Image (cartoon, rainbow over all chains, first blue to last red; front, side):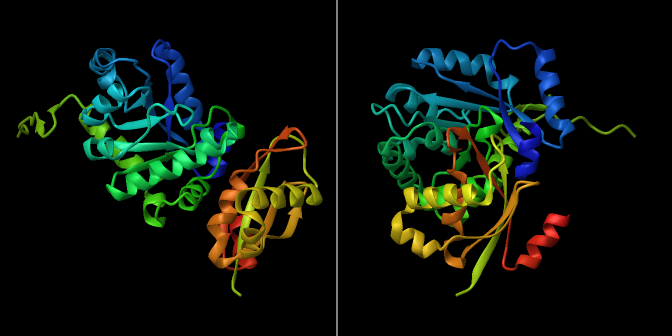
Length: 215
Length: 102
């Protein structure tokens, strides 16, 4: 998969790992990708079913990962995740019809809205998914929400080039500039921001310990 | 009309022949964009190298994004999974050859 990602033109990927995975295993996985010239950012996807569970998970995992994504399984979780500054990306399961990205969530959203294109379009052949994706993209465009495009690839066969992801988003109604930024500058800025925040000298947003230089 | 040329690589499954790749491409464009979309995109396979599974595909300049997405949405051929990755896009075949050599 690492070789395919390199061929497709990726320089950095978000590596979603389960919470209980041994650090040595994570290290070896990252090394495999880095050996092929693909940098990795550790990512966790929280699929909490309630507000309290989500807040507990965020307290526990925020500092351990470069990117925190929340899968919005119900409206309550979607509201909390959109409002919380610790959440980098929110995403929705296109199969679930009870919760979707709407105007009120777009107004609340602090992070970015993630669209899982390949995972949605390749594995499912429901025309309704296309409608829901188009509608969500239109809402995001209207509220000038940052849109992150991801492949959601679980194996090498689901990998597509970043330009192809942006092309699919363009055909679904996202502007050309936003679709290119969705696979390049926006995800990279999220990673860079979080790497900066995770440094020991960073106390909180805007507060940093400055050690006086020794002369 | 000006055209764009795409260098694509077919990954996995069976090594496709140029006819099979043509069929997969045509089906994907027709499925996702319809017959009118097909005539607007006007995809043509210029070269298909079976040994390296790379191909040069051309389309109308204004429809390059549609072709890129149609190629991304090719998932299988005859029950075997296939992934098509766009490696480069250029305005000339010469430009693509240079990139391929790189």
